[in-house]
Image (tube, rainbow, N blue to C red; front, side, top):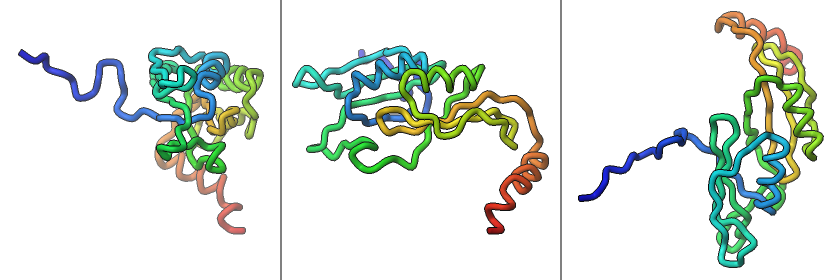
Length: 160
């Protein structure tokens, strides 16, 4: 008799970012140092150097990653001129998380700043072309409070 298999494996969330990078092994090492990632799975390609699939865990969330395979149309941001996607990471201390990532080789795009939506927020780019935002939630707001603050904070940009 066949064992019943769960549609979503135990320990996996419903939405999982899947990053393609040049240098997946180096990316894992960077994410371990910069973000405290734990590697949970690695599938090596037939060349013995590239990764077909790997999984890391940051906090309670998994991220898949793999090396580029151009002949299969699998390209990372460095090969396609960037990515419009930002990966968001909540942490207990955004300032410490941001500084740790920058010390590990990330490029700060926006230093930690208190934002109108109630988070202390920062943005950086990793050495593999992916953009990350970091936040520590500081204040709970009602929808009305957030909408008013958003209008106030963004008025100049939309009236230009």
